[in-house]
Length: 120
Image 1 (cartoon, rainbow, N blue to C red):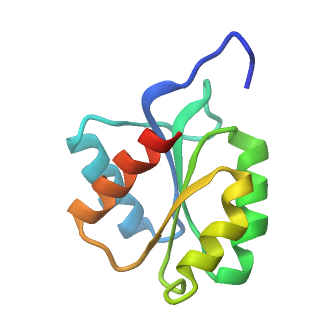
Image 2 (tube, rainbow, N blue to C red; image 1 turned 180 degrees about the vertical axis):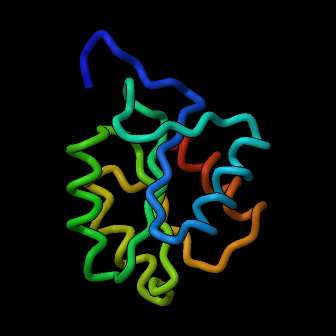
């Protein structure tokens, strides 16, 4: 991120492998007033929402995304359950502000987005 660029406070990058889930998250965020941005990102986004397939991948995914975007991260995963606290602490150094286990509701997701942006 350039010193002269500041993040668009409503822009979100969604990195989700499942097309249906990605479309749903895009709709939820769009309805809530966020702007979805695609790669390549024109400027630094306010937030990156990324799916993590397995808890063991969380640290490498977070490290890669931190280097690529320089934005706060909200990780989602269907495989992260009991380890959420441990995973969250181990990846915090890479910009992860929140880990949200799947499945989640619209309200839970939007609350996680808002809380992630407040911490950032």
